Length: 188
Image (cartoon, one colour):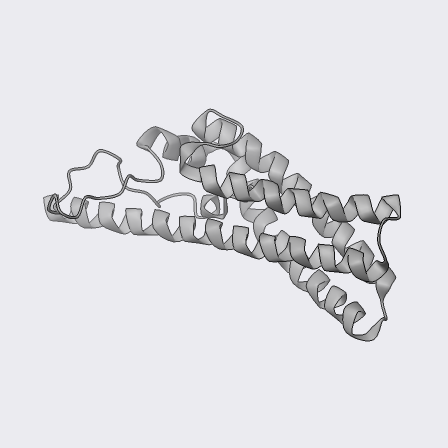
């Protein structure tokens, strides 16, 4: 799920990568998420807005679908609507993966596995694999409806972890921005 949600807060998030640090050498400063050039690219591309729209949309669809899947597993009712919700969630996931790869290419120069998002991209493939496994089970007629729903829940669990990874990146980008603002204020 290459949903670079940190891209949704586009104008001012990260520190200048080479700004001098006032930290002691015992506490080295971590590298900023974006270089100044990458930040300009991020802010200029339409794919930032696309990611900023798709990420919360996917999360909303996930919440609705999760409720429908749990309802089916608890009551045995609503298989068709739960199934459609998972299919829709998976299609949105594919969309956000493709557009996220394009975003990553524009900002970092590679379609996937840019150093700033390497582990998020790696885990995104597990998310994608489990969602795809669900579709294979569904359309291939493999497993019972309950087994299919459990695979969907496993896919959803990995999605939640992956979304958490991206939220942590957003927080890191905001902390970078706060450090940069503090440095700029100290120089004024």
